[in-house]
Image 1 (cartoon, rainbow, N blue to C red):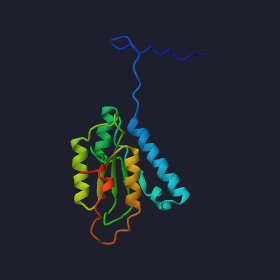
Image 2 (image 1 turned 45 degrees about the vertical axis):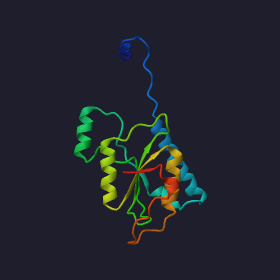
Image 3 (image 1 turned 90 degrees about the vertical axis):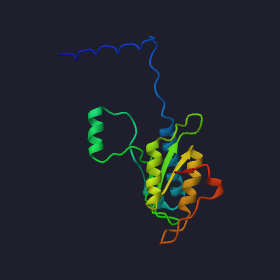
Image 4 (image 1 turned 180 degrees about the horizontal axis):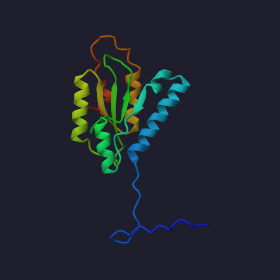
Length: 167
């Protein structure tokens, strides 16, 4: 019986300290948000189809350069929002939500993300950036509770949601 060849140990970093694992604060908060929405829909506090119409855009993360080239050819674009709610409400055609982690772990909004938000806003969608999961929950609840869109002008964001930034 042949045993597989033993792997060489990874070289130590320059300081010879073990590498620290990167913690994905934004990804964890996005998971919390999606689970919260699922729970609201199951309990009946929000319409059940809201959870079914929400989807994530797996745009981030590090990939091998060859895979990145293939994904770009397939239509992946820089700056696209993290979550999309394909539910017309309040005069908007849908919601594009860019979620940033709660401070102090939040990242800056990239130029590509600002341009994407402005582009979808110009096309009749609501493109916003929410800082932290609590802000995102308030925004989602407000958006879902708006009347279904039927040609009326868009509803402006209320004052209590002004920390969510329109681009």
